[in-house]
Length: 188
Image 1 (tube, rainbow, N blue to C red):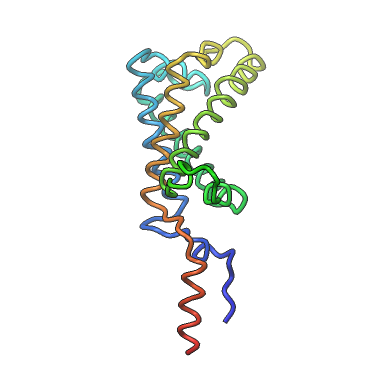
Image 2: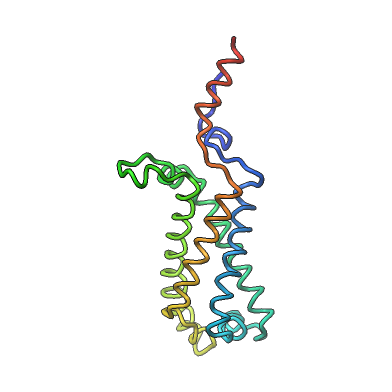
């Protein structure tokens, strides 16, 4: 009996939820944590500026809903990327450094979330949003504080929360050797 080593169960994508639900849940919780930091420092960013980017009514509720939607979408993208063979291979690779070798998949997923949050910060509020705001003309989006420290910290917190939730809900342990042992015991 031949085992497909590329199937989700062979590479260990298992857990109480699938990667998509874990990504959406982690992204939503991460975005709400991020929003809380921004709200504490400058509530107008969530209440006014975020809805203005979309030309929507500037209310706190609208801003929070948009914040959660952004987080869910970015969390889904994280789940998709982290479970693809090239990225999953990097996360699960054996390393020469003793400190990194002792980390489990959970710690590596949290680190991947941190890097993902940093990447999202570098791409969206620092590069994409100013370009979109400039193309659309004067709007509330031009006032979005992309380089503000709370935006950077918020994106890093988003990534960490996303990584923690994803690690708690998805098991990345290597099942290929376990599947081979089970199939050989069935053949006896």
